[in-house]
Length: 220
Length: 220
DNA sequence: GGATGTGAAGTATTTCACAGCC
DNA sequence: GGCTGTGAAATACTTCACATCC
Image (tube, rainbow over all chains, first blue to last red; front, side, top):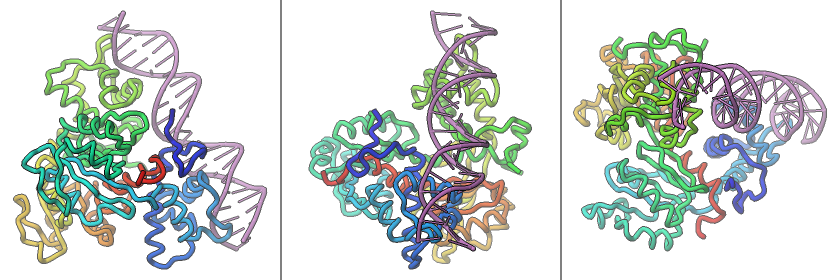
């Protein structure tokens, strides 16, 4: 029932989700190391940069293979390449933005929001006043073109930035069209079908959980 | 060594961080239930809305007290009130935004980014061209006024939206000024002093960890 | 000497299951 | 009958520690 095996990593023993969630951080650090022409890195050095223990890094990597050399460490270029392949970051992923209000516009316009391998190929909005606008080089499409364009452009990922009371409905429609992964900016935990991935970006929850640890009055 | 006891919840047995991180979600759902005039809610109903098990909700709440009535459930207003108090959301928290580029401007302007209890009281930027601008009713201040204004305005929380290579330095300065909690938007895991809380908002990591679970080619 | 890879040990977190109460 | 509160059991995750190899 777990949908954890794709062509890229078929038959691999189940990898904990927390481990997968850390891999992109490793990719990011390794990319920077490569830019600085570092050839080799140890789990200890990686751990310092990421605030995790060396043992955790070695254990995480061991779910996917043996990438290091004893006494030496990991070859930066090689490990980076393998991790990108494991995560599917060598493929091209077409992404749609749904909801082109203030936030959607910011996402579409933000240069380099989308890293290597992700390409914003379509934008949708339900408001006729917004449809037809050119935002960051894309013409905003009406919602009833969703199915057609998702098919045609082979869109598998959607970034959803619509008002909270529209969010579940929009996500339901996206899933019907075959979208497999959703990055949601609305302050809600939408329900998704089995096999569909969702991540919620919710800065307010982060703020509200930090105050627990702060001293009594904000005003002292 | 753990700095987990503040005046609000002194002497409480250690509460797991994951539990604290879930409380704001409970607050949010309860707020909506109150708006809809619901009087009582069961752990089962809460769990459905939040995609967690009823047992987890009961267990989470049990760290803080006994708020429910057997056979009935939780009084919406009462539980909401208690959770807000536990989280410190009845206090007033003054917040500074550091970095008023594209992203910082969006945060400052976004209506209702800051929920009840949070107030944006100052904005800072290192770029002289930005200093002095009026953004959403705040005059952008230069970085060398940081210490003075953080003291004067009793700022305990900072939202950091500066370029990645400036982030650690800015956060170091904020901590020197006594800032206790940081919401960081740069793609990095900054180091913080013990007792300082940090949350990172990093949509790219979320995107990159979802592709692991998607089928092979993005283009099929 | 120095660093990996990994079973085993140790923690943390979630879920179960049921007594107790309304 | 229905639902909470909670020890106990189960599961998930992290860290240890050391054999192994360069």
